[in-house]
Image (cartoon, rainbow, N blue to C red; front, top):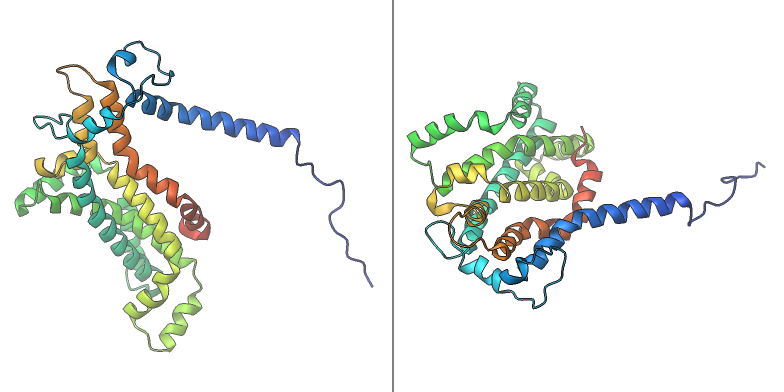
Length: 295
């Protein structure tokens, strides 16, 4: 009888020099990337006399959230001085339908291109893949003309359609690669049982696609929320997103430049993407590990 043998040699030490080196590098990197956020937070809590002293790293002597209140409800974003709250709700109105529609269309496209493989599917997938890498700056003007002719330029519907169209190629690629990694026997068994296109999609594929759906929600939400150029061009004056109103606050050239208000407005604008990454970061990693970016 052959005796089983395990790994040979001394047990790896948990306190090796290389381990301390990795920890040291990670700590230094974390500190480096947290410095801008620290400066923004402490500056937003200071008054202007304290800011004028020029000590960026000093803690606020008399912390106050007055700058946050002013940034939210009183700061001037152009001719109006009602803060950045209007932009927040505009970003919600733009992001929610744009994310939902682009993910829904991307999931259906990915499912059809993975399992049904109709005639010309590879050509269509190539065209969609090409669209994912075309800089949107080169097609902005034709889209403006088209939207103007059909009467939706400068409207909420217009900006939602733009974000949906630009997000659909990468969403299709994401779901197509994920569905391709699933066992084809699931699809064939469902077909043998008489399930149709939509039954297989809703009852089998989408429950299995939760990890990649989480990845898609994170990517689309952060991308659309942080967008500036498309919102400025297509949203119209009544629907300007939060990023555009933030730019109007920090680039104002009249009056006193209130750095504490600017910092508070910047943090408020970045709060939603930060919260998404903080609370769903582990699901993002799981989605990638489950095959979201394979293929």
